Image 1: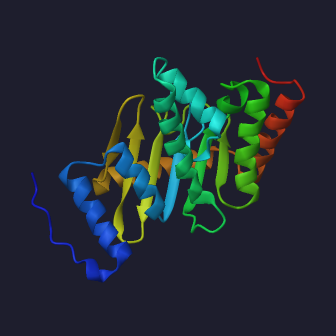
Image 2: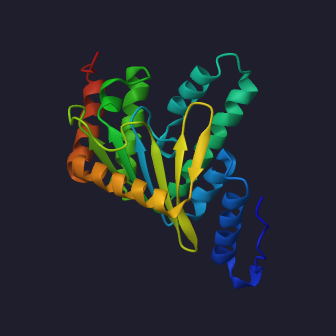
Image 3: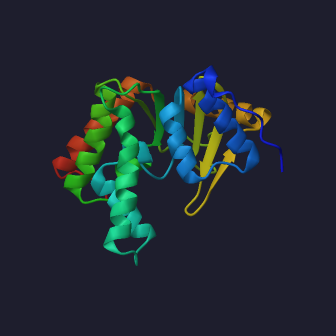
Length: 223
């Protein structure tokens, strides 16, 4: 196990945080909780979610449905705790908060195979669109028929920081892995750039999201 480096708190909060974050990653890897805390300090967050709306963009109903599906025997208190924690992350996009550059590439499948009833599905899609209209996020949609593309194996979150090296976070149902090896991080960043190039432009993506929300409200939801 590596020896912790001395950290000079007098160098300023961002630098101190960067050093502390770096040490935590080197020492034991980030836990899920530590990583979500890191989102608050990120300069940029680039996320690819092929099967779910990202946690930072979820509505209460969407987050609750996912938690209950993953934990069908959980007590109400535990469900509420996890839903509240997930929604608290979205405060990142409040008007008075310094928002990181957040880029989300979503699979078009998410617009066509919703996990909620129509009204709640429309609200979720409208929530994503509203964040884009307020210039808090940049969404892109990857067409369902785009063919082979980078990062087909699953989700990936690339994060950069003002005073710490970038990292990549990979998440599965019950665990997550943090990657901060510079060579691997660079490979993931290249893959994300290629995926971004394969996706629809932001304006076209936003129009598609808004059209999907309207279709759901008008009873045209895909089966």
